[in-house]
Length: 257
Length: 353
Figure 1 (cartoon, helix red, strand yellow):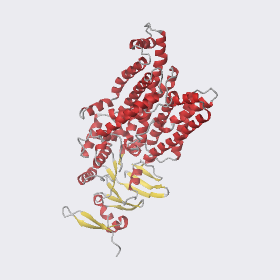
Figure 2 (cartoon, each protein chain N blue to C red):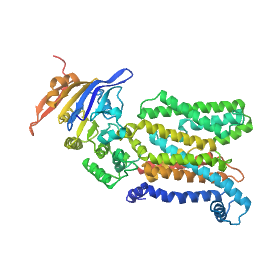
Figure 3 (tube, rainbow over the protein chains, first blue to last red):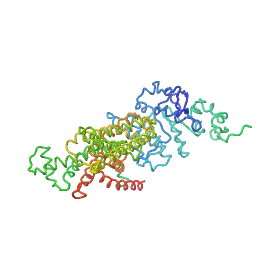
């Protein structure tokens, strides 16, 4: 297990946003984090990323408590793609992706040709080759999201945390990003809203009111009962005739009859 | 400039050696120009001869009065202007980068307000019984105000994200208002018309009284600013997408904010204590340089320092020659030039996107 947390808690003005969350992320898996709005997904991801210090509990990265690690050492192993990362600076796409190399650089280890190659590969991976000189504020929402993902890839992380990375993306790029993450030989934790996309994950963790209410393989976790209790919708599983995979079709919650 | 040659020029500008090569001659040229130009223009040859006599030990025959004006008066003044411009521009770069606010300037943290209170307390009330100079009083006042703002921001603090930046800005506004009110109170209560006019002149920024002794504090302060900013150029870059993003890139956010904002405050306080609060340099120069060299701090820091130095030398020359027989407060000149330039930048920026 590469990333884990015990009894994590975070609250704002006595309202618990995340409480008593314990989770072990297995090496190499793609763990989906799902839950309704306000269930604490973003807060949990930030605490797992070491960006926000938990109010209670501990996060461990490769068996070391995160609070004992230097921020730079964390960033060499783990990258976070935030949901709303924006800037007013007129930064170019290439410069933004180059930021991903920050934790590896120092006075003794200046920028090298290798870093340029890593940045090129990251741009290619998110289909942004040729966008290098574009200015941030000329990009669409989806292009910005892909820049952020490229920036995270440029960190060459062992663990990638993504907070609703498919927001703002058109369907082609949604699928491209999910398959990209799925195909990376690294551990990933990904907060998702689209439950059909969550079915692609190795395991799913369901958050409700800041607590884990279910954790396991998608087929075990995403049940009609779960959809009704946690998300307040009625879901029916149908089978995709193309490849035989399950698809969820949603309806508004029926009144109990 | 075309879209094609822009990236190439950017990458040259980002090379550290590029700035190490072009900055010294430009700065030297600006210093000589700042010394030669004035109400009574002195020919360049004489300026260069005096500088050679003083610095290289040559013995060109020059008029002793000319030599005195050049060396003791104008060159000292140009050196202080350059240091001050570089220091204020860098403080602006740091605060705009860390607080993620385009309107952040060196005086945001209550420093100029505190400095004016300190200066007024010494000059009008006679605090310190004549032992403390007006500059020392201004410096103490500036640091008191910054301490107040920092404490307020800490007590009201909101973690590390955008909210924290917002809290610092609000605390700065509260601190500035408080110390400005104190200054106004002291002037209204105790100053006579003559003192009030003198204070007014000082508040707008003034290089009239500076001598070599003043360079002892402003030159090291400017160098401190340059070294601190260059050493943290990557950390400043990492704040582009906010403090949380910087943290996820491995930046120790609190330590960086604490130390760099502290340096910016100290540099600004030193400058203000010598020259009064010269406005607009710290706000406009960083924005203008971002337009020219891009947003990466490896280029932005040296470019802003150099541009700030040259700009303030030029503003000082103008302040001496614009009205014959009269010296304008330099802050008036910087704002008179700065405001239209800023307007042009804003419009050009819109046209570019």
